[in-house]
Amino acid sequence: MGVGMMLGGFIGVVGRMQTMAVSDVRVMRRFFMVPLLVMFSSLAVVSRSVLVMFRSFSMVFRSFVVLHPIASLS
Image (cartoon, rainbow, N blue to C red; front, side, top):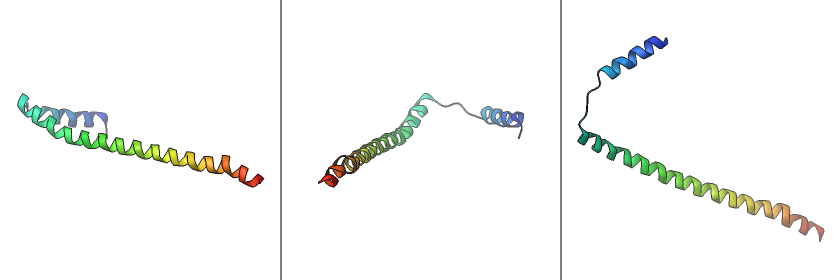
């Protein structure tokens, strides 16, 4: 597919666009707020999960590397 064909399709779509009133734009902002809240809450959940994973790794690392050699010496 050539660049001219893709650009021609884009120009055709932009040419058919209609203008919107400012009040309609405010209504559209409300529709973007819900996905933003979901995205930020998901980011918080993922970051907490990563912290839990690193804590668990540090506990396992400590038990195998630090405590295991001491137990094998006695």
